[in-house]
Image (cartoon, rainbow, N blue to C red):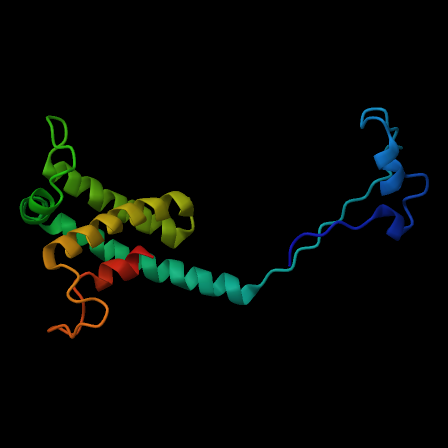
Length: 171
């Protein structure tokens, strides 16, 4: 339930306050005289605990999966850069300050920091954006590497499309 505004007159506190119609008849807002301390704003908030707990569970599960994804890149960053980033993501700028290994470290850092932020609920929109960008590149990599594999009606040899896990963790 969203916040609601309780009229002061409903609480018996609105004697002498203008009604909505009389307020609209005024020439300007600044010319309206209000008695000090006569307006009461009550905000009622009802927390939906089921929704809050389920969102927290999804955030923690997604964060744990992405921590694994980030740590996987740090096991062999040179190999990941050589066999994944360079051949499939060669459009990324790789001039002097940036190299394919640097992109690997940046992706791992984004996945680890984003996963930590998502899990802890800290800066979740920025964390989600960093994870969305790295997983979007992962989907691109898998589609370029293996194609669409007769999606959506194809019978795939491994019983799973190669890009399926990346797509699921992207969203």
